[in-house]
Image (cartoon, rainbow, N blue to C red; front, side):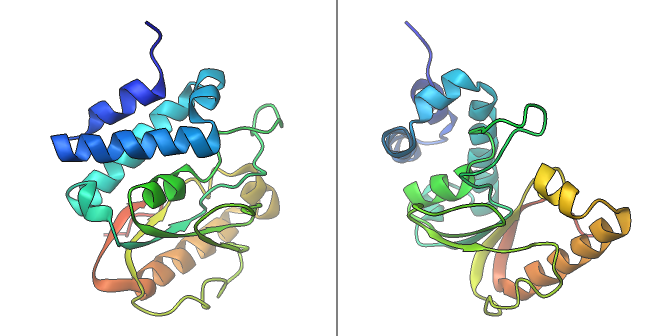
Amino acid sequence: MQHTALDRLPSLARTRAERALLTDAVARLDERHDLVRKVAREPELEAILEEFIGRLQRGFGSLSSVRGKRILDIASGSNSSRSPTTGKRTALFEPWFARLALELGAEPVALDAGDLKGERFEHHRVDLGRTGALDFLADASFDGVQDSRLFGSPEFREAYPRRRDHERVKAEIARQERRVLKPNGVVIHSDNPPRP
């Protein structure tokens, strides 16, 4: 019997109820985004989804607790992303975190410089390297925030190649994350951890 993402990912659930929720979410990801075919073509995608499931479990205590949460996904990935090594279109940088959160019942808001047209969650095309780019988001309006892979993005590195740009953007994103999080909100994951 051939192993697929539809088989493996639900096994990451901690409870029977969470397993049912995750099984349904993964099935909808396959139906809407051709997940199984994309994992077969790019096996690394399964590990990315496993990582996102773990982040949500750690951030909210359970996948069931994600329901109804407003979650900001900074540098979400897009439908126009290209591989940094081949330059070809890749599923690895599609907005999987926001897609997963939506299928688990959350209200994700995705931000990226790439194309997110056709996605079923709220999304905005944003130049994350520009100071004040997130000022349009209301203060204390998110239950959770994630930023991931911005500084490894080939598009970002091309637009902002200098180290001082990266330091400025890191400081701006950290400031914005603190501003948009609700008082009991969680940083689900950050590639820009706070400095001691």
